[in-house]
Image (tube, rainbow, N blue to C red):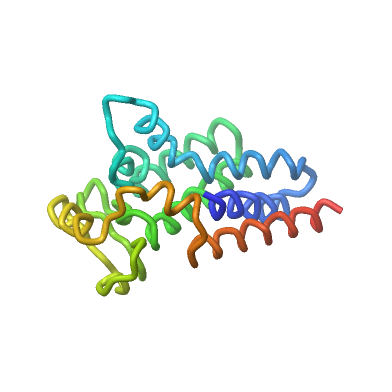
Length: 188
């Protein structure tokens, strides 16, 4: 989450550089919003008591579909709010999907609707270091994602990912802090 927020701020600074004259704090707030928007389905799953979100990848079936979300979302935002906001939406959403394809969860359905497989890259998070978690690409179908999660999953993934320090959390915090520093320097 901190990485998404940092990326939203950095993308807003980039967009404000391309489109000078706007309110950078507003750009940053909208950039953060756009960067976190694909996880809106997580909130639905978390609040709906009938659905248990034991598996971190389970919420990625609604908005984590880049071939649909990126062009249609960008077009909608561009038509409603203009070039700057369309560009900001596209950059932050794309980087959100990249982030969700490395380390956390079990990837993103990059080729949906042509394929229902999820794709992840480089490394997959596990609370305990295990073999098989480093690969250039992981491809999961419905059956293999369940099997992989049985072997490498973490029932307490929310607490262990978001409330504890580990190498990925450190990277996220570093990007977040850098984005705040760049924002402060850029505002002056």
